Amino acid sequence: MIPASDEDTMTQTQAAGRHPEHSYFLDNTDPTLAPHLFATLKQVQETEPVAWSDAVGGFWMLTKYTDITAAANDWETYTVEEGHTIPSTGKSVMLPLAEVDPPMHTTWRRFLVPYFTPKTVATYRPIVERIVTEAFADLAERGSGDLSEVARRIPTSVISAVLGFTQDWAYISSITEEWMASTGDTAHPERAQRAAKAVEDVVREEVAARRGKPATDVLGEIMQAEVDGRPLSDDELLGLCIVFIVAGHGTTVDGITNTVHRLLAEPGLLASLQDDRDRVGAVIDESLRINPPVWNMGRTARRPAEVRGVAISPGEKVMLTFGAGNYDPEKFADPDVFDPDRPGVHGHLTFGFGRHRCIGEALAKLEMTVAVDYILDHFPDLELADGVTPRTHFTTYGLTNLPVRRGA
Image (cartoon, rainbow, N blue to C red):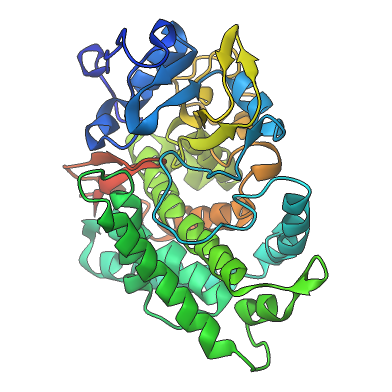
């Protein structure tokens, strides 16, 4: 975690708005939140564990681990069908899997799981290793650089290779990042709509290129498959590919960058992994816990609910604040301490929980593992340079840059 002082902690508790008795103003679209995000979430958890914010239309924050997981499992009370982010994005279609509840969610998950099982993902390893090697080429030649630029190349190239996309990874990456950055920009709402359309246009072009042709890649196979006994509609194909692109890009870029930052910032950690590669997985999981690339997701209450004595009304937005749950001392002892050997290190909420847990978890972890292995193999003396800057978007936490160099 980027350290935050007490003075940095957001203390904008306010006695106004729709639920003044439980009010804590937190704007998840505010870019100035980044340096003190986790300190702020800790303060909310300690002072008002079920808190109402009037930001971006208003929403409840669930901050305790048990409340978050209970809500994630209770789709009959907390639905994703009115959007799974706060605020909503500028997309034009529903996102299959991400924005459907049972029974249709079960159908979609059963359809997609075979492409992302650990066994299937293991077959992608040669692709990931090639892409990681290419991404590190410039850093390897110069001996220094911005590792966030290295990370930026990996996930988009991987998901493009898996799906069979032919368009330039850098363009897909740039429009995806613009979409994430522009969502919640109330002063310029057309930004998110324009970025969403750019992502949708990429998908439409890829789908059009495969119409009427034999399936030669994963996207082609999906196009010719059936869900619930029928072919996918154009909107379903579009929404599904958007899920793959967005989930497969920004969050994994942040996952790689946050983990490498942790790898280099913790004294002796890089050297210790040289002697014990079996700990890489635990290090990645603890990094994902303490610096979650996805720190929240949204739901909408569809019927009256009560959490810790607080009444939630139908139609109100509810934030599952994963970044707070990951720091809940009732679940993780000494949560501010980076400890890959802690019991239950895999129990973090960064990939979500329950039926909506990220289907691409195994692929994301593979990309992160290969990147860490590459550093251990080729940059055992890598160290941080100056200028690390944290960054948040409405659901994500990462770094705008990560300058690194070989040790002297």
